[in-house]
View 1: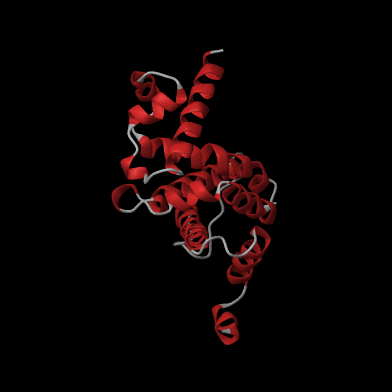
View 2 (view 1 turned 180 degrees about the horizontal axis):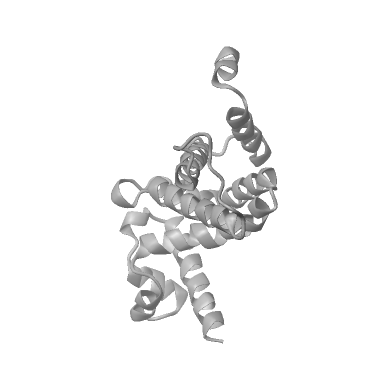
Length: 191
């Protein structure tokens, strides 16, 4: 019961934050504005989140990455990418504002961190019960692979949002898959 109440409050705060972000720059949103809109008192916010940037991180993890985790686990990467881009597109106004966050709590750094953590969790779950095998490339560790894909996904997400989501989720998914699966010299020849 307590977990359900916490989840309900988290969602209330997230929806309040997203509405406010569509009306003003995220940097200017106060915790009081978030809690007033959500209909809770300020201390309630701090029982759930340290600050609005941690709330943004929760939104990314819970509403974008958590739903794609089972798809990644089932080797349905294309479907996971499509779901990611479709979810972002549904809240285009919010993510259009969020992508403008720069500095220490930039949208880009939050997204990269969240994607990397999700990929490391998936890799860890997939390795449970398996004997550890040596890679022919010692540098090829779960951490380096997760960071590489987090960086590339983050680039695609941020660039796509910054350019107004001008191509469809299907097209951006296809572009990402093409770049990731085609040798660089082949991609460069097509430009």
